[in-house]
Length: 402
Image (tube, rainbow, N blue to C red; front, side, top):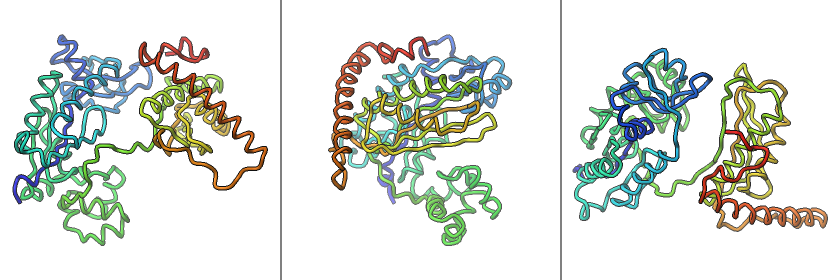
């Protein structure tokens, strides 16, 4: 197969949050910079520069542990407004080369550049051009992987980090994959890797050489999936409009909280933020899930599906508050809320299959009118938030809270 078979790019920014901080504060250049915190509590590292990684620091590590490994670490609080602005510039670069862009997060995306050769040159040329253009526009560094499939492209972008550019051509697939740890396969976490190890499967080559039916029998459909990936087979396409399945927010507290009123205030804060994000994206959701974790790490969830989808913070909060009442008493280490079963706000609302009794119909009509009034007020408040910032208008009970 020719190089033209390689048309999938995976582009991943190097230590994105930390790199933005170093770019904006040049005096930090060369220092072990991390973004995360707070350090004094249960904060974790969100991003670590490569200087910090040399000490063993990595994302999701508790900040206290990171400090022990790297006493000279510069720990900065996250500034998502700046990261989001940099992300917009990066995504604009992608869009200037191909409309087939599938964002995965603020700092990475898949691109399909097939059919773009006449405009921008070969896929390799496009990858190199994107690296240069990102550097030019944002002063940030990206690593690029080019391959025939999404799995291989993502793998390639990680092989030569930082500032990497790696191509995996079809004839190289076995040579690249076979020596790698089986944990490099998408979908193989610690538990699956341990089970595979018990079967004598430690590398991707080991997995590829096992009969497919044997792996599928042990792991079900996921077994067939990881066996295909071990052979470099991944038929997923780059989909520009990835459907979001849920939106949520959770927080691990510096100290366990038992006061239910305090927990309700956190819930209100979460639900207002979730509602704003849903409205910003033109989405609404139907299923509300509450997550609560106690001090001994016991975790419980409570879920309720609404009769009509919503993106209004007070509506989400009313449901989340009721779900909190169904959580056993006791101090909580973590609290979170999520709304799922998302749909586009442009879709017509689903009506009931059967006619409701008169009283129910009247109640439903009153609730719909109330939601309509709340929606009109919320749209006005959102205009203020977009113009002056999200914190310009908050519920009175949240005044003074970070």
